[in-house]
Length: 375
Image (cartoon, rainbow, N blue to C red):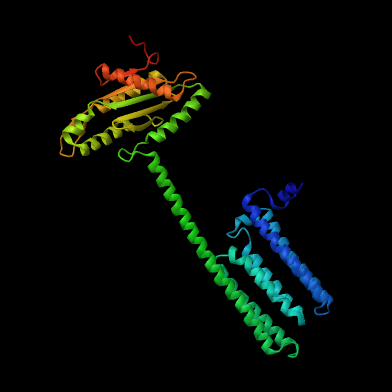
């Protein structure tokens, strides 16, 4: 029951609930002020008829604000919470209350501090400065009007000046607090953006191979897990191929590890360029790579792997202008029903070693997985 009532009053939209909650809180505080005004009136310090009129005006302000926010109409404006409108209108209420309370004006001014408390966290610094200027002009004119209209015995000039000074202090203090709060929010937002960027960079480092720019083993393990689950649910094909550069140690021994890094990057770029957009190529470790082909039949996978063989056979340019020709051995396996990830990788690894034994520079499929029967 309570939740249904809360949803009725505040909606289920998170931001709308915050806006409406603040509006109702402000209305509750204004209700307390209305009670105080009636106590002042019953004490004979304010005309009861004037308090009635003031109450209608005060209630109308918050009713209009609530309806505009609750209906969603206020979302069309830059200030969907209507914070500026509520602050300006509430300050006008305080000024009016100051006029009609006669000898009890000291009760009214503290309400101004409560109103501005909402503005400290809901208004921009520019808006708060506008409220400061508006408040100084409004209360300066109100205090001057009261001092001019009433006998000086009721409100001596010194008391009027004291009220004006206190009002200015409240307005100025609220503006300074608003600027400090805004600066703190900006700092927090900047730190949040920096933290998000740092987290993204850490995530990138954790899932990317620094040398080749390909996904690393950690990333591929997660992709394999997800694709295996999807393949089991959908019943679609899933192929995994292990790629190992032939005689890569000779490249490092002959030309150095720096040249070996160049060759690895060139190989990664070539293979990436000849596989499909849906395929995932990752560096598995050293000169070994993994190619994941989801929703792919063995016949389709065989065509992709033939392109990989052809791309790898092209000469990789070296920094000195020469080139080195490499070949790649590939072991491929198709996911069997109910098969675990480790078993799939082991069969692909066994096929890779078979390709090495058979002379390298070839694709060997794991048993029963070849697109055509292997003799």
